[in-house]
Image (cartoon, rainbow, N blue to C red; front, side, top):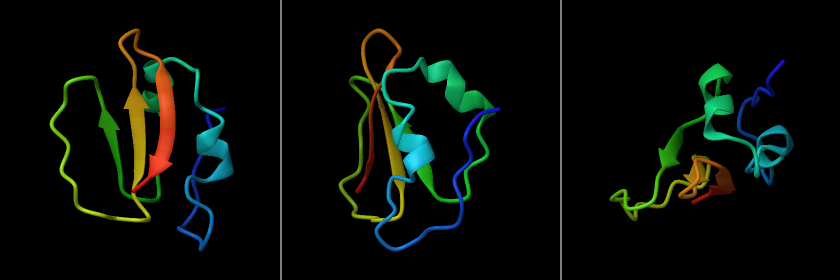
Length: 72
């Protein structure tokens, strides 16, 4: 079963279950139910620079792999 994120918690961004997705294919994100704001960023995507510390950003690399899971 895919990991689920819980409600935002201080100091827990990205949630441990989501941070473990680094290195996995982007397709695993389709089965997730996320309880916090998120965005999926592909190479070349325009990304706003607004700061939202509880938003999870999934950064996808050229091969379709989750390269990073960060909050900003």
